[in-house]
Figure 1 (tube, rainbow, N blue to C red):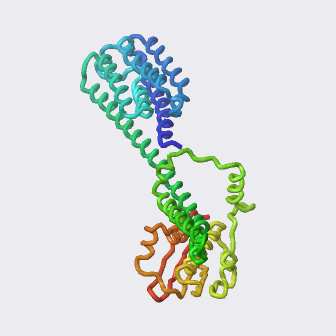
Figure 2 (figure 1 turned 180 degrees about the vertical axis):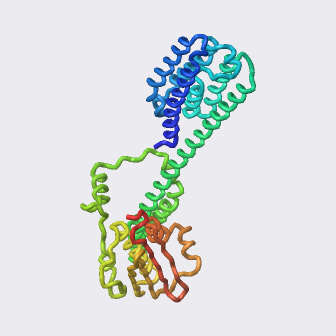
Figure 3 (figure 1 turned 120 degrees about the vertical axis):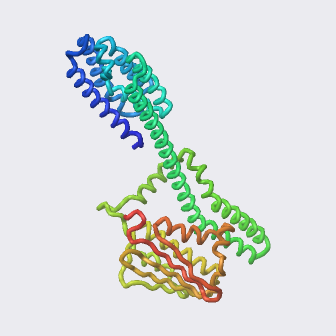
Length: 401
């Protein structure tokens, strides 16, 4: 809902209430009018106009500039008609005009619709009409007119600020969504394409001959792809303003099925230990509770992928002969998975350097996954003493599912 919609509802209520107030004033002073029937004819027109235009001030789409000009005209006619139907002594004493404070509703309509500039213009017209009605400047008239002018301009300015804030918030949300999608794609690419290209480069260099050229080309493509996915999130602000692409029907169907909840309305849950079991082997030891560790499907899948990325780092940086241990701790509020190896460890500052170089295994495949789930990833390492990665995920997930 637009931030200004409550203002339109308030304006609608204001017009109705002030109409009742103007009718009450007319009825109370009926005998004091020089021409009560003429005043009554205007009050009938004002009542009919307010009743017929209730829907016009219920939203910005219906409240057009033509209607606002007509609304202001009704108010100004009522102000200028007052000296013709009311007694001169009553006008000199400061008796309200025929439309009374209903007039402010016409001015506020300009303020909500067009901001403070429209409000200033409409207020000036009303001020001029009141001065003509009183036949000059009177202290009480000036005070009242200044109050209307300042209030309407202030409300118009607040509306403009609210609209700007709403646009800024919407743009920020689009940027955040685009950035998260970029990071998700980067993680998937790191877990598949980049690792394959790196393997082709290493195998090509080892085999030699024509395979060397193939390995060189794979290495160039790996560097180019790493650069693309590492600079992509910074360009998300530009992509957020582009029209959202429409997914093919088949892709949309698969996405809908993947995000569909369980039949009873609760999100699907998966056993984390079952997802981690394939990693266990002669050099990887898996330890955990004797019972399943259920997590929401997305949390379990992403956490298992992060563990896989950590083990990939062990194989790449510690060598095929390194041993690794996976420890799963099932706590009431969160699940903690620790991946430890007996490799050479990570030199201080190496993780930050790798991220700047576009090697995003830690930044995206591990830390990025857990951040999206509301979790965290911590590294404890020292040269010659191995590396320990502690992965934590809230049991209910970031969204409280």
